[in-house]
Image 1 (tube, rainbow, N blue to C red):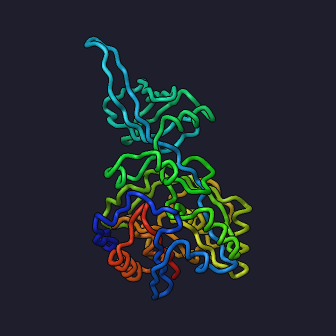
Image 2: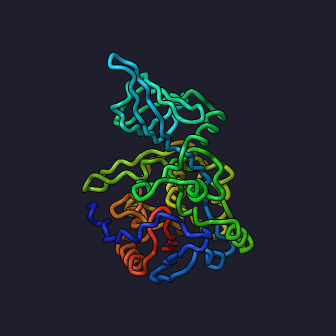
Image 3: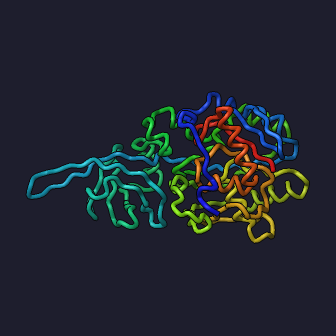
Length: 349
């Protein structure tokens, strides 16, 4: 199975840099069996059936991008350097793994000063990443980060424009609850309060799970034989109550529909022994590519993904490679908007 098997031509002008407003006005490609229909996200209130259950990722994106200054005194006088930091994941002792640019301008033990009284010391370097120890913890850290940080927009958006105040709202789901992600579960960005209420009135159930999406979601696949690719690990949790809701829906004949590949990866992690969905808390590095056997998900709502990405491999596993290729050809031909701020698809095998 080669990387080129998951490639396709994507015109650059189809990459969305702003989301649709209102959220549920985004376009929705409905692919059910061999049929394709062009809809809107708000149409989900008639597409879903009473008794269906949506699995929603309630992770909250933190403002993980920081810009600060490193000051140094030496024989040549005082010097300063601007340091850009993207937080990646917290460690058990409260330190943070981070991308630090330029890392060569920061020595071990040196401190970077950010806004809002936030400071970080470089305590270690490994695999091109820095380990940072901040002067604040807990609620004080969260408050300072909210003032000093910016939303960590995906690289393909950040290359086209800087993050701004609109992104603080646009790049967060309306049901975000548990802080810890450095990338949004983007399929969930299409839901707004009116749509959620319409779905409840339809008899659709909701189950919240948590998967903290990491920056590794944007890392390219660098091997030709995709089966040898190593996935990044992300922390997730399915509570006993959430697992029971999903199991009850399956037992009653309802459909379990994860919103986003993050929710799908988490519930399939919790069921990969084939014994049914169970409570889960820990890290997952599950890699889903063609040949994978799905145990829980009956359908998948997701955005349109990067060529040659692990997410293209996931949707190819879910729908079949030939089928997903025809779906994406339709999306390009009909000028659907791609990636994090783009349009959505509902995939029903």
